[in-house]
Length: 107
Image (cartoon, rainbow, N blue to C red):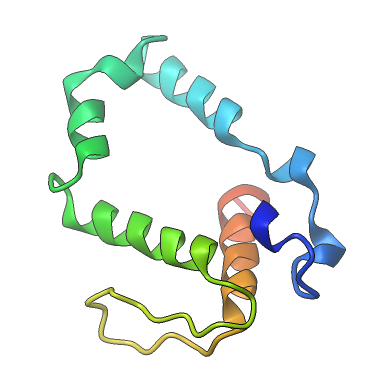
C-alpha cells in the first residue's frame, strides 16, 4: 500500500504503523507452529515456491497485480476467476479493502 500512499483513496487512511502486520503475522505463525524457524519447514518452503496450492497462488498473484498497478493504469487480471475486475483507478481501493478485511475489520 505504500506505493499508493498518495492516492486520494488511500491517503486519508494510510497509517503504516497500523497496516504493517508482517512481524505480528510472523509471530502468530511461529506461536501456532511452535517454531521460530517455521519458514524453513517443508510446507512453508513448498507454499513459497508456488504450485502446491492453486488458490494461494491465485490470491498472491492478484495482490501483486494490485500492488504493482499504477493509480491511473488499467488493472488487467491474469486470474482465471469468472468475475470481472473493476477499472483502472480501483487498485488502491482494493488494497484498502483487503487491509481492512484482513487486519482491521470485525473479527
